[in-house]
Image 1 (cartoon, rainbow, N blue to C red):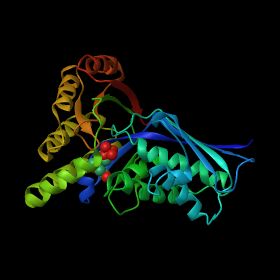
Image 2 (cartoon, protein in one colour):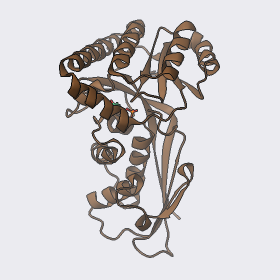
Image 3 (cartoon, protein in one colour):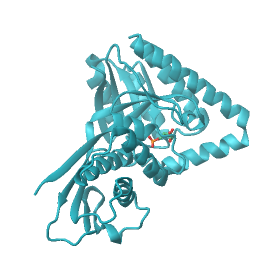
Length: 314
Ligand code: PMV
């Protein structure tokens, strides 16, 4: 039986989360050690339209027709079929697996969607190009958290470091000198929609104050892009610390993130910040390969439930 398989990586936001929702630039990079995979296999004994979905990581075993229309997995399937103008989907099974921690700011939702769009469109005989995959994944991101900026679907689809401004085509960043990031997971689910809506409420309460915070975060993202492209990666540490300070002022940190950020800095990281929506999820720290293990151990000792080391570029 021919099977159509596709993957998509995880991601971290290096600079500019939340401010990116308000039009400021942000930088995100793929994390290729973790990935989502979708496999579509034809079912010659099934009825047209019968799509069996297995997603063991989330305990889902259901027919497409039994899922609510706005279920993110179902929506990805419907969007692929609709885009390819396929009215009757040939009977098949769709298996979705992922090693990306869920609800941790590592882009698991976007990666699962992108993998499904790719595998399913290939199964339907017409693999969608990246541009359309990213565009459709953005539609599914809206189900996950209302008003997404679009950064997750872009970085996950293209699997390249991206500089992103909402509503504009993403720009790929050239990594002149690779650098190493340690990622520490608080283990607390990171509720993107809630954090985004709390920031909006705070912004509505004091627009001038929040606009100034977003401006500063945007300026940091621009400086970081320059540092990355010119190979001055040591400049990124202080920029990460400064960006974290702004995120604290936006109200999206929490005691557990503060604890991990402090532990990373104490262990010698050149800078550290929360990454993604905040209030839980992951933090990231800039290290050299030589001190990566020391910082990773410090994070584990400080209570991180999962620690990953990733090289950006190279
Ligand atoms: O879903 P997360 O945790 O990667 O956070 C998304 C980043 C935000 O800037 C908070 C929201 C967005 O849509 O860009």
